[in-house]
Amino acid sequence: MSYSQLPNQPPAYSNAGVTEESSQPRTFGDNIPDDFKYSVDVASCELPIRQLFIRKVYSLLTIQLMATVVVGFIIRSSDGIKLWAIENTWLLFVSMLAAIGCMIGAFFKARSYPVNLILLGAFTVFESYGIGVACAFVESEVLIQALLLTLVIFIGLTIFAFQTKYDFTSWQGAVGMILWGLIAWGFIMMFFPGQSSMMEKVYCLIGAAVFCVYIVIDTQNIMKTAHLDDEVISTIKLYLDILNLFLFILRLLNNDRD
Image (tube, rainbow, N blue to C red):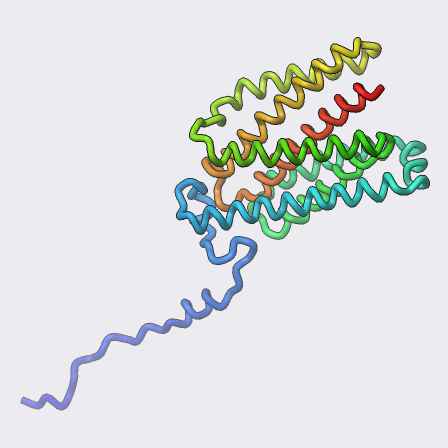
């Protein structure tokens, strides 16, 4: 019997597919697979992945807040822009509707990069214009006090939310009902001006307290319920919490000054 002929060898498997896949650059999700990002929440991930997600959220949030401060400073420092804003109040309503539209679009396209970031940027610009106009006619001392108070409260609540073992996310339903009641109260005050200063203070204090709780809730949601590709949604929620807290504090301080 001759052993010179060897049996047929199995075909060689090419690693071209692997090479091709690894050569494709990842998008904003870095090296985390898409199916993993969409199906796994942050709380289930290892510490480095959780830290990466949190860095993304707070980096985007910092950029948003800095952009808002810059837009507000530009509007406030220019008499021409302030006069133009007064003469074109319709633009406030347009910017408000545009901000709502961009926010809704960002929620629907939250996992579509870079569309989500484009919508986030547009939302920030439109929202910043409204905030800038609202702050343009407030005294500098009151404005600085409101900014510092908001910053201190936000940092303190963020540290508290990361450290506490109590789950504040169970408060979402109750706080949401209070928020809707607050919105209804605000509409009533719009149509029936001339409310007492005490009523105004109570309204502002309740509003500030509601968004303080929302900061804690949304911060804990980042760590517990958010998915790895939800950085835009998480950023928008925290951004709105901070802005609303700031506006209520600003309104409260401004009324005290009057």
